[in-house]
Amino acid sequence: MTVELIKPSLETLPRYAAALERDWSPDNIRGIVTTKEHLRKIENDPAAFVDGLDDPLALGGPITLPDGSRMPRLPGFVRWVWDGDFAGSIGFRWQPGTSELPSYVLGHVGYAIVPWKAGRGYATRALALLLPMARERGLAYLELTTEPENVASQRVILSNGGRLLGRFPKATSYGGADSLRFRIDL
Image (tube, rainbow, N blue to C red; front, side, top):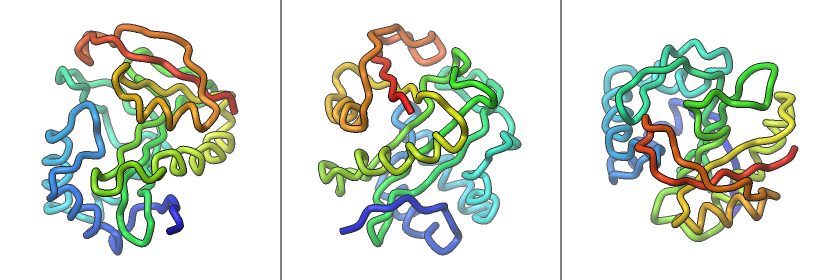
């Protein structure tokens, strides 16, 4: 099966919502909180929800961190991982004019594959498909973070040319736990 990244649309939104209804979350930090928020937004205004997933000018207002604090949004977009049906999502954010990120942003990329399609290489392929989009934005590298015990995510990053920069404590707004930082040179 071919895996591709597609721009979210009203036509494919029902498949995304179906994954949310199965308690999948596109957010591996806020988890079920994000799932419920997305279902509520889809119910209230599906078109606005889909439009908000593509925000290259950071017009969507502040983001909420896990501790409830609010910080400025970076430009970014979400693409859905698609194999003929919804398989997951990958988000990309950047800071204009630099490859660096503000301290409250853990990485340029976040991805989540639905559990019923995990282990098939979808995340590896999704990240590979995203790399040219990052190059188009003029970035010299991408930084990604993952938990030390998330070996599957580490394999995804390493398979795409990532190298481990080291272990670091997350900001207290993210709970302060140890994490690993990787870099993919573009």
